[in-house]
Length: 97
Image (cartoon, rainbow, N blue to C red):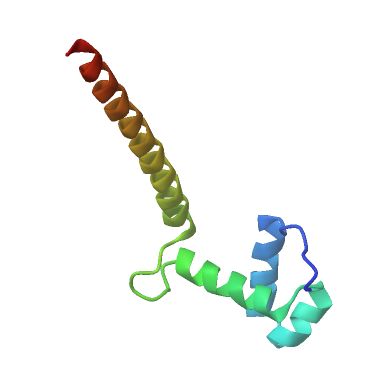
């Protein structure tokens, strides 16, 4: 089973991406020096590109992804509330007949 690591702080990620772009080292060497996996460093670089507007068309920025996540939670809550109100209305409609 793979070891898990607590999330790295955003400042550390940003510095790692800057180092990857400015230093002459390759990603494998830099990832080893920083103590992160190559996959993590590549993912941070890709996310930074997307957030800077250099991603593929249709890819969501971090802010857009957070908003989408929040809106999906809100929709789920509203659907649950609607279902509860429907059941309550049906229950009270039966009682009045």
